[in-house]
Length: 196
Ligand code: SF4
Ligand code: SF4
Image (cartoon, rainbow, N blue to C red; front, side, top):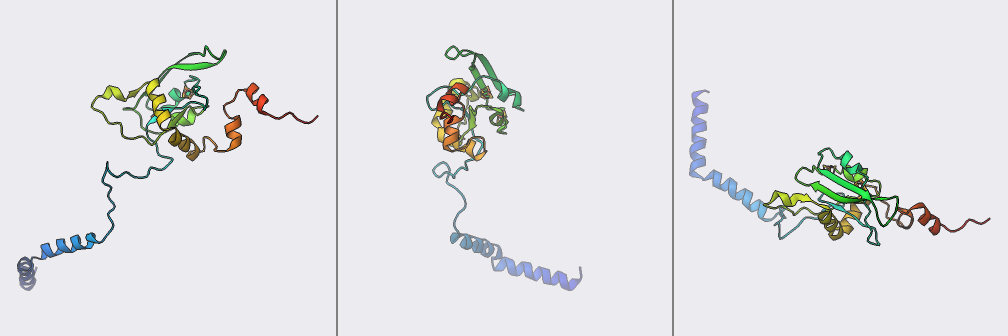
């Protein structure tokens, strides 16, 4: 650097120091942002709108008549890449030849919220909800058992249905509501007889 440029640089530094240039720059930024709408949310007082496809805590669902949808087939357990699902099933005493999950555990601490278990379920018994506030000091509370999973499903049933609609796993139309998840003899009862 030449002597002249060194002199200019020194003069600029002296001028900046004397004119408080850094404070002026900072004040310019502050003033600019005083008139801009803030993008931050005052969580937990303010909450974001969560999209329907959001992958929050998992819940188990029931049919409208209160019957458990889950048939204990283990497909969700097989699909889970984190191996955090455990299903124990047995024959359903109320419905011969069908099965039901007697125990169901999901270790939420291992879940990566991929949604594969929901996709694998043949009867849409599992769905993800918009529930995300479940932090705890006791890790054991994050192993959701069957009771807890049905509680989550019941508390967030509308979000769970929206999740299934958003992921095209369940249609929100009258035909689907009438015919899906029915056993063949129930579908036959619902079907009007053909004209002979
Ligand atoms: S969302 Fe993914 S990681 Fe979590 S339980 Fe389901 S399959 Fe396993
Ligand atoms: S939740 Fe679905 S996939 Fe998992 S055991 Fe129950 S019926 Fe099978």
